[in-house]
Length: 333
Image (cartoon, rainbow, N blue to C red; front, side, top):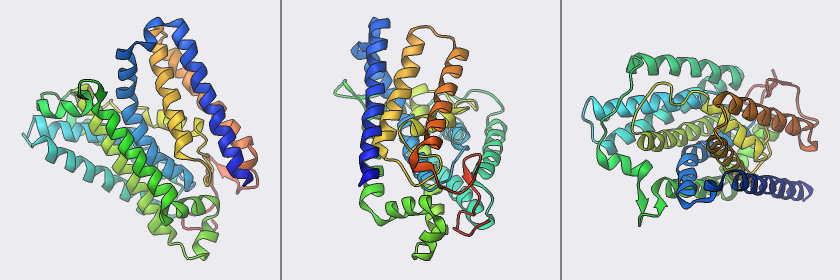
């Protein structure tokens, strides 16, 4: 009961931060509240918000996936090349991208659960692999020339008003909320994040659940990559570089604990809005891209420190880089 109250208080706190940001940017940049800019923000946060769903699942189980950014890079390059170079129909190329994203997630999950190597190390290594593959495939060159129908996913609007990408975001978040709050699998995510060994002894198949978590993360990331490619209308290997830290910032700001077992998708969604508004507002104010990196880095650091010092994170296992000193299957290392 107390944890629920604390979660609500924290959600109200980050909602207040979001409101303050909106007010500040509205005063500093009059064009911020223009309808065109609001819809632009909605399109911009679609990929971030969709990726945050799968990333939240991973964080709740006590893991992390640093390969998300270059999963996006590889997916946009492969999808773009299938359409532009090989003439594959856009819908088939999207299905292949979804399969690729899910496969990457499954590989991450298998390595983590069957070797006991920390998720931080596994996904960092996968990040480098995917980065190299995306450049090998694209040869460092941009890919463009996609079907007009494909561009509607990221650029189109229903009735000329509601961005299609926003509808995708709402649908994915509804699915995520259902999985996390209405299914036994969602309860398993929290159980593993709180104590993987206790969850295993209670009958939870921790290996299978963690593989599913990383597969879902890869699947949702692929959806986000497709929408991003459609909006940009150009595929480049550098597209997803650093994106994993934007997703991590949004989730941690929203109250998803980097130590596992705590957080809600509602909070993560507000975190996504904060990051989206911050990015857009700083651009409108012509703030240097390097200064933006400093600001976002400081925000992430502050959020992680707050999470580590909060009462809900105390008493957990020792941490190295945010990863508990135990295998993901619940067997102490």
